[in-house]
Length: 351
Image 1 (tube, one colour):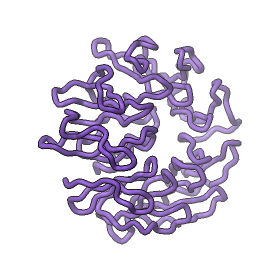
Image 2: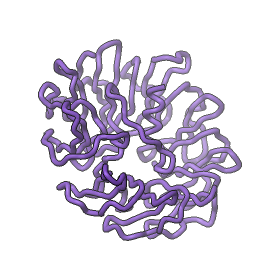
Image 3: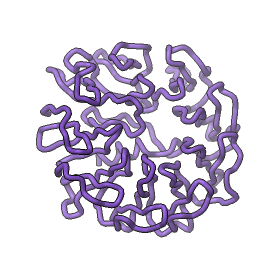
């Protein structure tokens, strides 16, 4: 359940995500990280360090004092908790940049578009810091999420709105649900009806859906008559609404993750089941590959497949998480590894 809860926190829309602090022991790189630094644990106190893509230690675990990762590196900065209990944004060399509160919203301190959400402990209100830790948008929101594509989702009372990086309203808080922009479109909801909006807040399509999720890989997952399918960027339904769940991929040219009954599989942009639902558990495609759990084993036995369902010759693992920036964390017994899509081990350590 830990794995599922953590991934749900990473993938959930702002309207759905509950406050959640990642487990201290989870090593995976967060799916949307844009900085090629990869975590590992070491030292007497099992603190966190980071390597680069070549496997060279950039931030030594033995001296980092990083007790917990709160949010991954983006734009060269990451949110961490130090061993003295302080929350801190650090740079790509591990140097402290500015303090942040430590609470159940640690996952939310993600730097994008030069801004990071921050929560004022006294009032509980949210605003945004810039990369220097200076107030860019004053605290005024009941919740604020990381920017993406120069747009941010915020909540005032129970209503959601969309703002620009200047703090100017794009959509005033009159939405009952909203998720982030991807590929120039954001899913928004009003009292049970969902649609997508352009960066200027205009509706993108003349169709409403029962639910909708953020775009990825050219797919926008939508719910129609209690079943999930997907539209393309023109609003055309390219994957028929036949499935019990659907999630967009994180890389272009890869299929949509779908669920039928209790099994997961993948559907391409022509609506074909390139991998019929058969997996007990799997992740959306990221960096061109997907981590899947062998359908014959409910515990462990993870491997990777490509966009046509062919298995990568990199082995089978007790645990495996998605490739992000062409590196994936896997675990076999007590050995942790960062590997390439070709199976090369760039770094390893024992739990």
